Length: 347
Image (cartoon, rainbow, N blue to C red; front, side, top):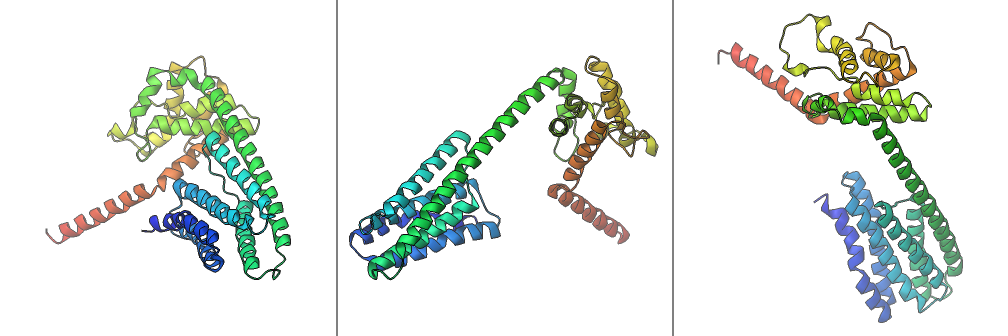
């Protein structure tokens, strides 16, 4: 029900439109004002409840935007018969609606801005005051509210345009980064031996391939932003866990310093040198060899080495605290405790 209620409140605004128009045409202004005030409150509660219950969704955002626009436009159309100045509010609101539709068509993003929300609320206030002025003429300085609303609409439209420009530029930059990154690591991603890492388990429900691809791309973007050797970061990021066999399948008893965490970095370096000699250089070898610092004896030598080390650990920590992983850990601990208890009780 928590997922449904916020969307139902939004849909209610859309369902109310025929009643708004009917009451307006029948000159039932009192009923129209009461209905409009009640429906306007749903715009506040649907978003508040969705955030409180953590059930926000893309569908909810779309419905909210559509509900706001259609509800406001229906109220404005009726007001045109009583005050022609509302024509300008109607025009600007239509332009904003059309622009948001254009943005969604282009980049599949529903724009939701704080200024847009303020503007929407101010429109509803101006509309309600407009209807009150119909009932009691001259009781409110409605022209001032109309001018303020138009100014807010103009500011909102400019901000929507600026936000779209930034989003478009960001997508273009991300696309260009992706293409450049793929070009750098193409020989690795097409290598059959490297592709076998898709079958190597790593973190919880994640393969070595998925892990190193994310680490590599993050390192590449950081290196690009900091004007460092981003090509070496991309390559070393992909090959930092290029060890020969999955460590989970090795049941051989080893001393602490011979275990996977202490040895796989050097193993990955040798394996990378074997399969990708043309891509390797002293910096990349050093980055791979020292990425497990402080488990490694060698301290990272380059700035790029520190970036790889930190990004790899950040990714590992993220998965270490995965909710499902923690649940499984607690369950295993509980089962072990119960088993020990049963054994001690002779069961």
